[in-house]
Length: 297
Image (cartoon, rainbow, N blue to C red; front, side, top):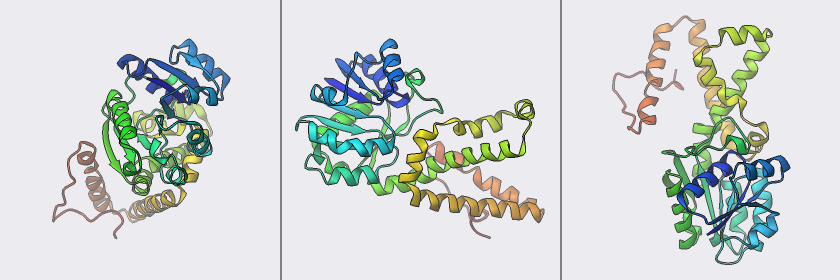
């Protein structure tokens, strides 16, 4: 299978690495507007060739869209116009409702698979590509019923070689959930970085006093604004809801600090510890004697 990967950064490059190791593709063509990314992808051996988008599409059986979500929405219709009925297009963006609305209006909607591999780092560019970026992580396919069986089969094969755990849901449902479990954490990290930079003008103090907790919490603030601005834009309503709930909880925490109600703070932290059960794949259990959720007073 000849594959075109549009976008040769962290996600596209890491997919290319795994495709090569697994033998999923006999040939990988790279497309990227950034000339240095094209050169790096070739020198690192991530792709066999770089090409224009139109030329690459005409010679490929699978198109992987691994570019920022705003760019993906802009080019999807043209890509679907150019492909034949046997070509499959899979996008990797972290917002799904908008691109699915565009795909739904196209006569070749059945050739398109809306997907989201929930994996990444704060780094970008071809050199950031990792062999094991996706291992054991969750991959999501949205609105699968609108894609052909062949398209879904190829998408499932791709996620299998990426060693991801695959699940399916609607695009609107995806965007709501991802606002809380992914996009909100980036907002929190960006704003933590801003808060510390505003208060700690002496950068040496930040360097000397920052512990592992601060480093791990603020790590996402190093993520690319070019990638995250369109994500926040496209999921703004759901993200606003998530940020609002987060602010309510922060305000409650501040109120309890001001009141020196550290018993309640202790119970809230104990309640928050239950997130470990979720992350470990264990259902969150409600206890009769447990303190109520933090959005209650």
